[in-house]
Image (cartoon, rainbow, N blue to C red; front, side, top):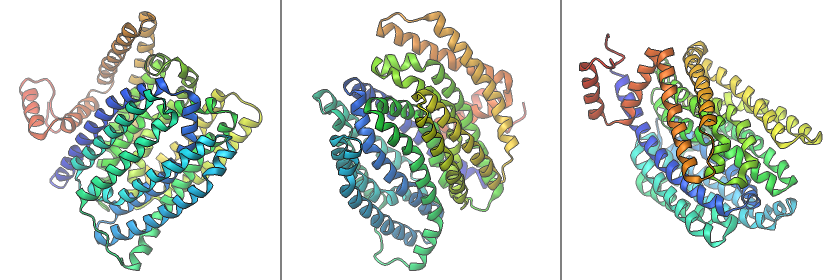
Amino acid sequence: MAPSAPVDEKLNTGLRWSILRQGITALVGSLGALAYTRYLQPEELGAFALALIVYAGLLLLVQAPFRDAVIYFQHEEEDFASAAFWLLSGLALAAFVMVQALAGWLGGFYDSPEAASLTRVISYAFLLQAVAVVPAALLLKQFRFAQHEIVNVITFFILLAGWLLLAPRGFGAWTLIYPQLAAGAFYAGAVWWLSRFRPCWRPDWAVFSRLLGYSRSLLGSKLAIYLQRNLDNALIGRFGTQTLGWYTFGEDQSAAIVLGVGHTIAQITLPALAAVQEQWAEIRRILGKMLRLALVVGLPAHVGAFVLADVAVALLFGEQWAGGVPILRAYLALRAVETLAVIGDAATSAIGRPEIRLRVDWLQLPVFALTLVVGLLIRLDIVTLSWLLAAVRLSFLVVYLRWTLQAATLAARDLLRAAAPATVAALLMGLVVYGLRLALGPTGAIGPDLLRLGVTVVAGILVYVLLLYGLDPAGTRAIYWQLSAILLPPTTSARLARYLRLARLITPPDEPR
């Protein structure tokens, strides 16, 4: 137990700060999204999505590979961080110049001059994010989660302020561009100041070689993910910005739980696993613990979102986004597994096996592209095509999870055993929630309908917890203690444990009942 305690404490602290940040940004971000989606039209979001194809793709290619490399190499920190910074800076600058040169062609291809201007401007935000990758990774590597998450929260508030300021004033798609520049400038300056990172001018060339050897699999994997994620947007965009706006809305909103649950846990799992490299018992314990947490929390959220999608979108975003609801539902099943896969990404990076994701992503890409092209050629409607694309991605994610568990020496049957009661409880909860929404019905007034939606969500949570406890009492107690250790400070958690033990309500998992 002794070696595990320090790692567990760091894990709990990191998750506590990440959940706090995620809660704040989810609440405030929802308000911001409500604001700009009520002013922006689908075609304006579609124009922004075209610029985002470039911006998000560039970030995907440079962010994770170099962040993971800085965290993975536990020794010679200064040399590896400096080498990563200079290599990343060179790649980012080359990409920036290329985007500036090709943005006009992008606008012409989609017959959208505004998309060209949006792309040129947002590429400056990419430069700011790129120079912040290494110092931000050092904060995570050193388990300085509080500072990292506070910076993220402030950055998000800057984004929110920009949305609220610009959306009502008719800035259109630029509402989503200008705040990225202000937020990026703050974020880069803050992480550099906090990390005290000062790159050395001449890192050892051997360090560059080792860094490239580790990062090339991640770079190749992220390139495949970028092509896969944006190939559909690129081709669907040819059929009009409104259709693309609905598709982008549905696909993006379906990822909210992955970001809130999966990425939050994965961000903390990566440095924790990297700190116990080659200690396979610890790796199995930590990875199993994090996967179980993501599964128990994320799965019912996806089921509930599927059942309530049409009601929630109409109330929160407006009827103009109703066209995106079927697409949102198509992608939710995929996202339930993706929540686990992003934690798998942290595991493969931490144990030095990023080639696993590379192999799966490049196997998936031609199948995905063929499905997309054939679907467009035979003129499938956008909803049917979305279901097919989600099914392709889902099948390969299952393969990836299987290979990741094997690499981490974690038995797949253990994960399936943990998944069974949560899956049954989530599906039964979905039926109850569906019946409840039919029983309550809409009133046509926003206030009462929002109240009914809230009541339905709370009822669904209570039903899920009761069902899960009935199906798996020991597992539910273990999750309870894990969450209490994460959400509460150590002293408060210990006092609560003593009280519950004395009251004979819930016994801690390491004590006999």
